[in-house]
Amino acid sequence: MKRALGVSVYPDHSDMEQDKAYLKKAAEYGFTRIFMSMLEVTDGKDTVKQKFQHLISYAKNLGFETILDVVPSLFDELEISYDDLSFFHELGADGIRLDVGFDGNKEAKLTFNPYNLAIELNMSNDVAYLDNILTYEANKPFLYGCHNFYPQEGTALPYDFFEKCSIRFKEKGIRTAAFITSQSGSIGPWDINDGLPTLESHRHLPVEVQAKHLFATGLIDDVIIGNAYASDEELEVLGNLNRYQLELCVEFTDAVNPVEKTIVLDEQHFRRGDITALMARSTEVRKKYSQEKNSAHDNNQEFSVGDIVIGNDAFGKYKNELQLVLQPHKDTRKNKVGSIIAEEQVLLDYIKPWTKFRLKEK
Image (cartoon, rainbow, N blue to C red):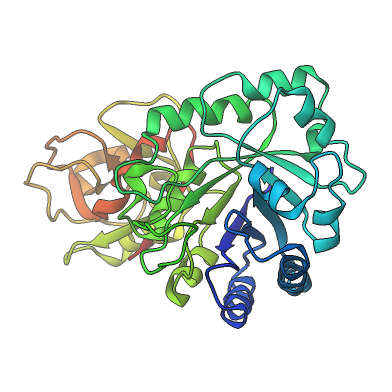
């Protein structure tokens, strides 16, 4: 399934022109999804319709798909019904996210709405909610899954729980989404906003590391910035992110030589299939660079987790093989040429047998 980047906007907590400028900038960087909150709507049906219709129309012209976040109280407020989704169709929305669930049959019926609106489910529960809906023969192409975000520090999901919840959706072929948090955004749905991530471990990380992690799990198709407004720099770095292959940022040692730098940066790496716990080996490069000399340097210390080492001239047929260190060890036949930056070392766990990866200079 193709992967997408998204942003969130909160029309009842923000300025329309600022929202439009934000969406225009996000579109320039390749963002194609919008999470748009309707949880705080209190203005009355006509005013709400005019405001959301205008913003969604603007977004659609920029190529965005818009999913509206709704709760049962909204239907009461606007005097509309789950049995008639024409109001959201008239707004121009592409789908609605159900913040709370029903009996399974209800959700399945909603996926057959005449407007082809996607029905997005809350993924942040490790229960058989999706299985129940699918037993009622839901229209799967119009069934999405999206995790919650968590404004309060310390309340977002731990990774193992997130994984269990996500697997339930991914193994059924459902399109999935989760949230990351901007380090500059201050707008969310509530008066508490300590960031808006799905995973607690992400709350204070750079946006690109959060996104790399979610994509690397193989469980999330769409990564959405939960709070507004992300900075231009954050939008740009996410727009340039490789969504389909893990790219790790490298800090080089002072003594790295041109051949080593070329091996690190210019080659398509993959972890050898018959793996070892000590390091992740990229072995094809040693064949290509077998005739290139590589004198010893930075080879007498103990290598640490996250170090990048390359075989030197003393390593025989293994000269110029690249390895990512997974366990501390010593070997004078290897040169330390750099290290994966500290924030991204958690991503080493996702380099499995045959995993393709690239390295780029920080």
